[in-house]
Length: 284
Length: 284
DNA sequence: GCCAGTTTAGAACAAATTTTCCACCTATTT
DNA sequence: AAATAGGTGGAAAATTTGTTCTAAACTGGC
Image 1 (tube, each protein chain N blue to C red):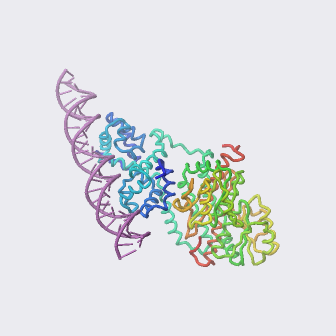
Image 2 (cartoon, rainbow over the protein chains, first blue to last red):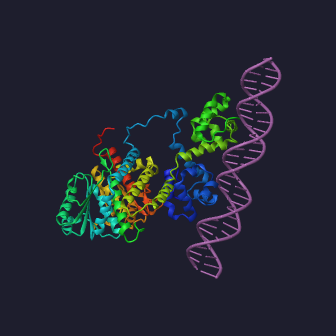
Image 3 (cartoon, rainbow over the protein chains, first blue to last red):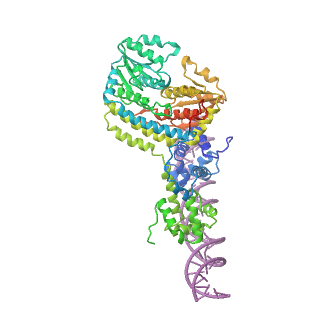
C-alpha cells in the first residue's frame, strides 16, 4: 500500500473518488454513501450507517481498512474532526450576540462570498425573466423555428456560449442548426448563403460585436428570418429583427451573467422539441 | 419534576441557563461546558468530555439526569440532531422530486409554461449550489488558477458553453486561457504540450465525452494540474483531478440545464480577477 | 468538633458497539 | 467442469463506552 492513508477529510474524499472504480460492488455502495452523507458517518453508529446503505456493519469496517485505517472508528474520527473544525463552536454568550443584522458590505476577497452574491443575483435574474418575456413572444419564436429549413446561430465573445448551446441542443432535437463560428474567417461566406427560408438567431450584448452585427445585416438583406436575443430592444442588432427577446441578465459589480439567457435558450429548445421534435423525452 | 424534559437544543439551553444557580458546583462546571461546546457534547465520548471539564464521567450522567433524561446518551442525541438539522442539504434530490411532481401537471405545449418551469428549476439549482460548494474548494481553485502559467479549457457537447465562457472571460481578466476546441482535430497535439505549470479545467457531464476524458488523461499523465467540473465525484473524469467541483444542475424531464455550472464558472473568474486580476483597485 | 444530608470520585458493572472470524457464494480461469 | 481467488453475510468475540454503586469528602448546623 503505497498511498499514505488520508488524514483529513478532503484527502479522503479525493482518495475515495480516485479509487472508486476499482472497488467491489458493496464497497462502491458504501463509498457513495460516505461521500453523500458525511454527517451520518460522523454521528451515527456503524449499525445505523450499515442499515442506511443496505450493507453489513462488517462491510463498513472493510471499507475503512481498504483505505488504510485500522478500523471504522478511526475513519469516523476524520468526519468528526471535520465538524469540529468547520463549526468553531462559538460560546453561548457570543452566540446570543450573533443576532446582528448581516452586513451588506460583502468581502469579495472570499470566493465563497462571490459565489453567494452571484447565485443570489442570478436567482433574481431568473425571476425577472418570467416577467420580461411574454407568452406571445415565445409562441412566435417557436413558430419561427418550426417554419425554418435550418437555423443559424450567431454570437461571439460573451454571447458565444448561448449560441453554442443553442446549436448543440437544437441538433439534438433533430433540427438542422449551424453555428456561425467564424472558424477560418468563413463567416461572410456562410452568411451570404442565407435565404428567406432560413432562421438566424443572433445573440448579442453590449458592446455589440461587429461580427454579429454583420451577420444580422446580411441576413436581413437576404430576407432571412431573424430572431434576436439581446439586452436592449433599441440596440443595433434589434433593429431588423422579426422577433426580439430583451434579456436583462444579472449584473454584479460590472460582471454580467448569462443564466437568464441560457434559461431562455433552454426554453426555446425544449418547447420546440415538445411541439415538433422527434420524440418528446429524448435529449442529452 | 414539573418541568418537561427539553426535547430540542434551544429548550435545553434555556433550561440550563435558568436553573444554573441552583446546581451543585460540579454540575455548574458541566453546565457551562455544555453551553460553550455543543459540538464536543455531540461528537466526543463521555470520558473525553469528562476530561475536558475536569470531572468524572459519572458526573455527566448525573447532569443529564438532573435535566430529566434517562442517561447522558439521550442528551447527546439532542446535540447530534442539531448538527444533522443544521447542515443537511441531502434534500436536493427530494426537492427536485417534489418539483417534478408539480411539473408533470403542467401543460408543456405552452412555451411560457416551459420557461416558468425552467426558471423555477434553475433557481432551486442555484440555491443548491451554495450548499454544495465549500469555501475551501473555492479557495483552492483560485490558488490553482493563480499558480498556473496558462489555463486550458476542455469541454464538448453540453459542457462546451461552460468551457467557452471560461476561456473567454479568463482572457478578459488577463489570464492566459486557451480553449481546447478540437478545431481541425488538433486536440491531441494541443494537449500533448501540457506541462506541470499548466492548469486544465475540464468540464464534463454524463455521458462523459471521450474527447474530454482523453484530455484529462493526457493532462494527468503529463503532470499538469487538473480541475474538474462534473456532475458526479465518482465519474471517470473526477478520478485524476486535483480539485473536483460536483455540480448537480437543474433537470426538468431529462433536460438538464447549465445555470449552476455557469454560475460557478462566473464565480471562479470574478474571484480570480478580484484577487489577482489586472485592476484590483475596486473598493471593498 | 461532631453529625445529618449532599455531593463527588472512582471502581465495578452492564450495555452497546466495533471488530474479527469463518463459512458460503460468485465469478473467473484453466 | 473443477479449482481458485476474492467478496459477502452473519454471528461470535473483543473492545469500548455508558451507567450504576459505594465509600469517602464535603457542607452547614448545632
